[in-house]
Length: 308
Picture 1 (tube, helix red, strand yellow):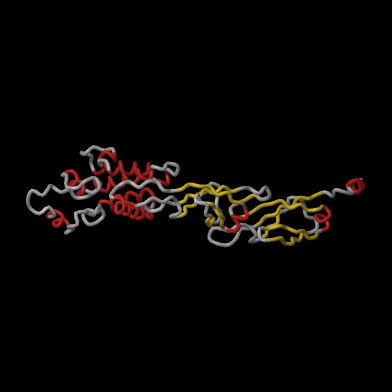
Picture 2 (cartoon, rainbow, N blue to C red):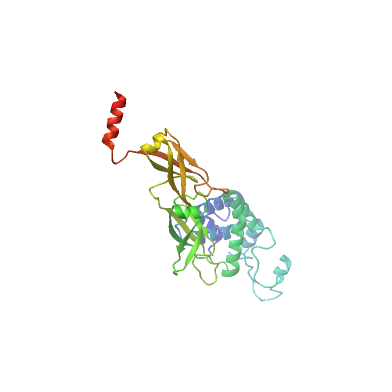
């Protein structure tokens, strides 16, 4: 890893406020969720976190400046010319393994980073970043992890949205089922934990599935509600009657009252798409009066006589 001052872009004489400000700016800039198309963002983000873990903590910063620890927080040995080379470890916490623990004891450098990350991205992210960075240091010795996330698209239709799931084919040819959240929007990304690329020594990446919602040409979506036109014969509109309406879970019979005008909207409860928080939206059918294909001349004569 590079010198933490260089990573954060600050001088060695920088104040705590200046270091914190630089970390906030870089953490926001390189956050993986802000750079979904940049495969190197995750590595840069981890490097910034590690740098602030060292110089963002007063005690560790002093140890680093005095040459007692390196860029990853590990203890440095002065040599074996005399005395006990592990004496420093015993005084600072009794760890004689020679490996050091950048996340244990001391001034809690990463706790400071976690507070800043909580401010930037919410309380749930700080702990997640801490776990991910801790795991990276345990398994890679401080090396930045490569981006193992896999980006892909899934074309879904109205039936998929109604069922709340679809299938996607992975690069290895396997198909997996993906749950679609209620009221999903076109372009929304679903993260599948651990379904991304794999690399020895690292945790598997995630699969980032972007939804491409294909319109069916018959319905208009309004959240969990659906709107569609319903052709109705003139005779039915005038005299009343029943018509068949196709819904996502089968056909139903709808009663049309006598004297129904074109544009009249009927709301079919629970015949829409899944709603956030549970339940189903509604299907709104708008009456569109359809003239008969035969006997139109007689109909014109009737209305002409009625007009006269």
